[in-house]
Length: 98
Image 1 (tube, rainbow, N blue to C red):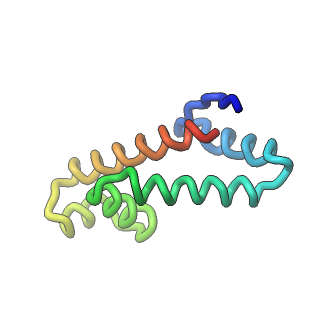
Image 2 (tube, rainbow, N blue to C red):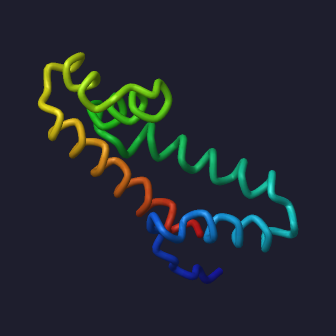
């Protein structure tokens, strides 16, 4: 089984995932569920605790970088760096599976 490597970036992520879902036997929900499981596992197993907390608070709880920094007693730049590094890890893992 060969894998085509596609680098997911901010400007092509939606198109890449749409193409992936459409080529998956026309089953968008099947592709979406598979990707969701892959990403959940990656978040659980590949991120550090601080990366996981920052990502959760930022993306799921819609907190600002400054609020997260205050709650975690970190500087805003450190929180931003945790989020950026986590996104890189997740993007790298997603690249492998697409």
